[in-house]
Image 1: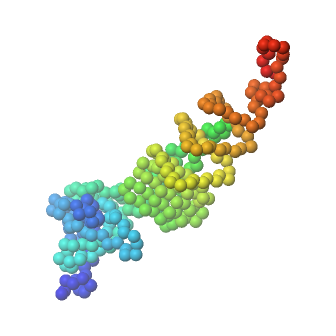
Image 2 (image 1 turned 90 degrees about the vertical axis):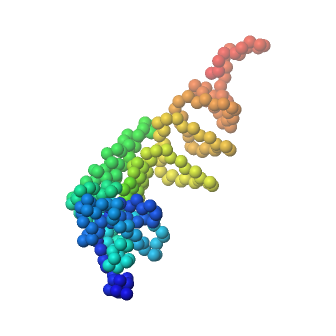
Image 3 (image 1 turned 180 degrees about the horizontal axis):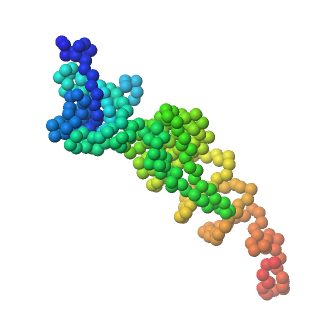
Length: 295
């Protein structure tokens, strides 16, 4: 029983993830374990490394994910000193110096050599090479509004100070929950740079790089307590299956208006300075003669 887990057969290990293309789809990773596997891939090929099974917390919803190539991981051997069944129980940061001797990681490492494996957004380093840098370099400036006004997309108020920024970063996506005092933000970014960001004052920017579809099965209620500006660079089409009701103290329209159907007005209509209700005609005559134009 000397090889029984929990007794003298409990063996720890440290290693680095090489690949995660698990044919069983269990989230397993091939791990090059320090002290057990040489760095020379000619002597220990990547495809001969053991599959390590990740261990998840029991008090959270199931997470179908695994560490990524280049992650430093640690755990124990489920089969004791036989060392053929590693289990991953954690990931720890590091600063990679190089890949394994003779070849890179099977899937390529996500981490630049010489940099900590923590997120640049966590460290506040090389921000111009992060989604925040991309956003700030591609702001929507001088958007024209009706009436001759304009507005511009605000730059990110990213100003994190380690260790306050909580960053979840995968190979493709980023999620920040920044608790930096005075610079608290929430930011979610897709690989295509579609994102939303909530600023420290509660302002929010949403930018969609592709098409946007919003489907509401029931009612939609919007209350804007300030000014609403909508700018459409192309055409705009509105289809209402029922009655459309609008109310304002006044409506100002610029451009030609074409109406198909009947127009009913309960008040006066003025066109070219002439009242429909109160205009008069000159040259009034008896019989079938025509009058002059309205005055």
